Length: 181
Image (cartoon, rainbow, N blue to C red; front, side, top):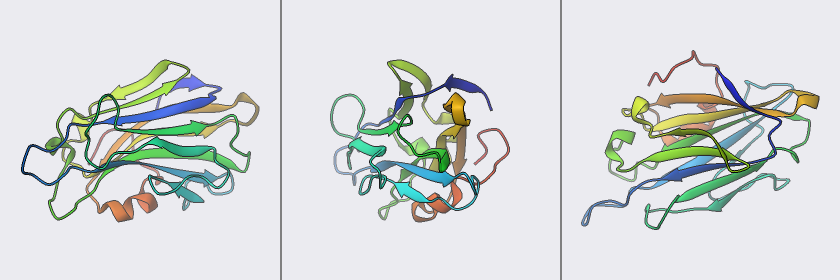
């Protein structure tokens, strides 16, 4: 796991995809963030942030949301303000899910898919999720706090073939390095 960004302030996780072809049901993807405590950084999340929620203190929120992939640029954006997250939390994992609204889909089924992690106009990571093409959910980023040194970004691409409803409970588990699905 490589450390690319140190002492992070405000970070954006951005997601884009193309809409469904004419006549097909919408392809609905979401960014999901899970926050872990200093007491249990690999235990269950203290809270989960997604399109219908934000963190209790407002430090993690969605600034853009789409249920179809229509529009220009990135369709979903999650903003994480690491310089404001309380010291009680020391780990944040961010992932992407595909809603399985009656039509089973994997990342291979999503056209023009891309995710990026950006801090202060600097791209920390960009990926098309092709390495986890057979997955229905994927972790894409991990952030950890080192106390006085601040928050660090770690690449964390790992695909899973699980129901999106179960993803929040699984996304922070300890995993071997690599994009296994």
